[in-house]
Image: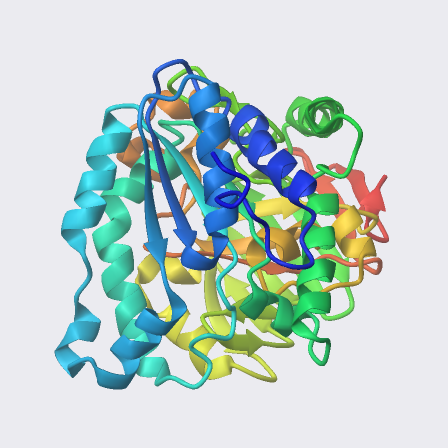
Length: 418
């Protein structure tokens, strides 16, 4: 490729961007020889797409296919689209993706859309479009959440995103600051990023193994506004860092990642919980969330801002009011210590312990790769069209592991591993 085709935008270090492309392929995906790759990206992320594509082919990829999204064309639908169009989605496209994944194609998503893009649009239309899209995407998503294939997510410092994170800064300055934050969180600013990820994975695996050795029946979260018991799925299994997909390839699904996580029991979550950071969802910043769970179901939902949007999301289907994930992240994580709100779940969830409403991960069960959806549900795994993480950890939150006999073991104290 020519230097021009690989040009990075002003404020973005081209060497760091190339390293991110290399890490996406060698750490995030670990592409197998001859394996196809399906990639999705904002059109603004073309410089990173080109670098990932180059590294993928150097690694022996079969065919790399990229689907782009554009913010202005997305807005055009809301400005001029017929009302009936918001109940439709491009099912044919997702069916094609599902077929590609069934044929062992890897999946890579580049995040970086303007998180406030739909802030001024009709929330009802946004909710309808999301529901239609989630329904159409389900055949492909099942291959991903089932961990049938190796997949990963990385991020690009899209100018529209940068201006949300760093309001008031000139665009070039905002892009530079966001790029530097992405590079640091993704460990590509280190001398040997691949080795750095190897060491980081080892630390996450040590935490994962400790939790799995204890076989906790539940976790108890306590702190300001929070007194929550999260029962864990029968035969649950903690994950964190690099994991092996059903196709035998070990990959890092999220870059960055600071979490260890597992599947709660959909019917065994009780108590109250308060969010510790805002949740950015489809153009709405949802703040000060307070939820009461009874028998696994969210029966009371409040938010100081964005409550209507959150309620609509939780009414997507029956599983949307139940938990599909619980994740532990120390308050000292690099993303937390940055002090930034990224308005992007990939980053913000790695700043604090969190829970997720909706779909569970089947891989978070012992022998999860061999279980049918019915067997996952029988073990307490939740099913839903959504999966939305929100942060409940901080330097004021304590977490205890509860054994089957009722005994307690300190897991975290004041947001740090005990």
